[in-house]
Image 1 (cartoon, rainbow, N blue to C red):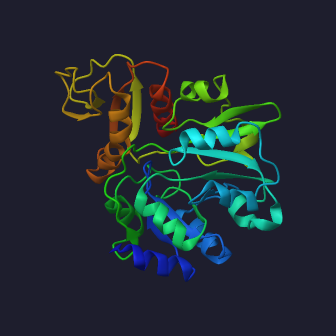
Image 2: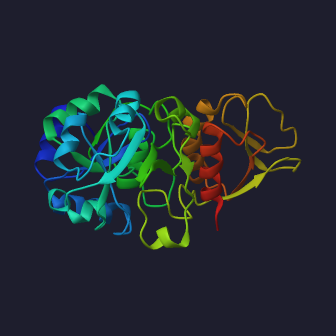
Amino acid sequence: MKITLDQAVSLLNGGLVVGIPTETVYGLAASINFPEAIGEIFRLKGRPSNNPLIVHVATVDEIAFYAKKIPPNFKELASAFWPGPMTLIIPIIEDNLPSIARAGLPTAGFRIPKPAITRELLKRTGPLVMPSANISGSPSATTAEHVEDDFGSGFSVLDGGQCDQGMESTILCWNHSAWSIIRLGALAPEDFLPTLGYTPKINDATEENQSMPLCPGQLYRHYSPIAKLHLLQNITLHDAVIIGFSDRIYPNASRVFLLGNSNDPAAAAHELYAILRTLDDEHIEQAFVDMNFPNHGLWLTLRERLLKASTA
């Protein structure tokens, strides 16, 4: 059920959960002042309680109340990439942030989303915690209709249209002497070089963070449709459903879903989750993905998402 900004403010300030847009994906939002509503997010998504949520704020100054320590280059990163698809994980004053939101960790992730309607909402509600607005483990929602598909037509969603980027925020964590990327996202590792003077190291998911992840998206199987995905460098199959590119020909395919041009990773990121959802909407049991694309920049994020989406 699509609602107005005023209605979203009222519901959130009343301790309810609302779907809201960001430039990356839609989120399930709850006020940081209502632990019961935060708990409802976990229930709605079927999300493990050890999987922390990101705190969304309207301004950088709001983070000072929660921060135990501001790491080096935090302000430079904030100035360069906020509002935008970057989340920064920092040590926090634990008494100032509900344990349920941070999964009991001494750290929390913060970000300022880009859409004007969402920042206006945050100004009127204060900080909101939110993960992606989808059933845990399934492809993220990039339209209000996707949120309604997952949570019902009566679920309240602030409609911001289709998300501009369609890929979750890049999450950076300060680790003693440097920032590292603990979730690939809409910003590529090399995007941070001019600000930091180095390209952050990518920390892959491990057995350890399966039991206590530092951020969303660190579980092995994630972003997954019901359909089985097969990832191939060269596709020569007959009568197969293909996820591929508009500048390539798949003459033997029974159906082709296009990610856009093979030289445009932003277009592919924009389309990916919608395509994965369409597979399930149309009851397609398996699809073959053209993985013949680079392994750097935003392509690296796409590769990681597809690997997680295809994990059995």
